[in-house]
Structures are given as C-alpha cells and as structure tokens.
Image (cartoon, rainbow, N blue to C red; front, side, top):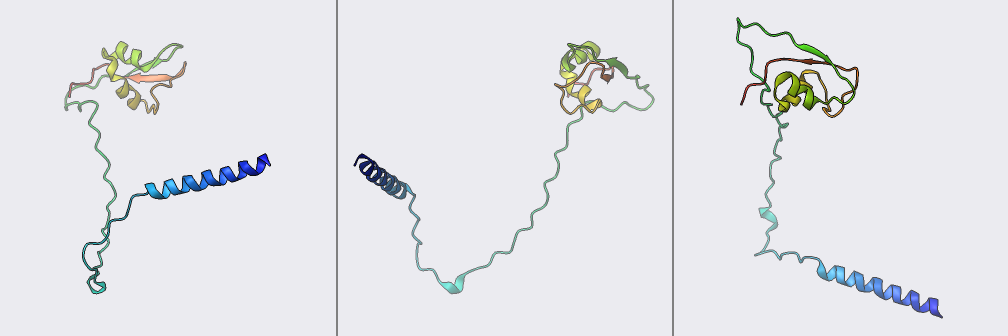
Length: 128
C-alpha cells in the first residue's frame, strides 16, 4: 500500500514540475500586422572570409646593418632552473622569458628539463 502512494506522489510531482516548466517558458511575440506571403524576400548568403591572423608585436627590434650581432650564449639547464631566472640572469630582465622561450621554440615555458640547452641572446629587449 505504501509503494502505491509513493508512485502516485512521484507522478504528481513530475506533472507539477512539467507545468511549472511550461508556464516559465518565455512567450513568443505576436506578429505586428498582417504577413503577406507575396512579400517574402530572400536574403543573399553572406560570404564569410577566413579570419586574418593577428600580427604579433615584435619581441625585439631588428639589428641595423653594419652592427655586429652578438653570438647567443648556450646555457645548459640544471635542476631548479626556470626561464624566469635564466632570462633575469642573462638579459637583466626576467620579463624577457617569453622571448627566450620563443627563440628556443619552447611551447610551454613552464616545462624545461635538466640537461636542456638554451640559447640566450645577451642584449635586452627594447622597450615598446
């Protein structure tokens, strides 16, 4: 007898939830004025162009002709190193770590490993 009452109560609760859901749906706006079937216009499809890639701001300026380009220093990573400290040590500014990562094709600057060789340019990046 108890199971029958639970089943009836769950059906009533389900119906009540359905009624509340239907009542809470937003109402569709009614059309303003008569709609003529002859005045239906077709809209030409809009051609979408592929998004243009954003141009990255340069991380450093080009070296003018006639000026010698300093050779990069090769640093071997040891346990406990990170690009922030390496950039600070060799360029003087720890915020150059993205440039060091890009110059060495390191996709994830947080992941460097002991024994990895990193080429570091000694000149600091110019201010933008």
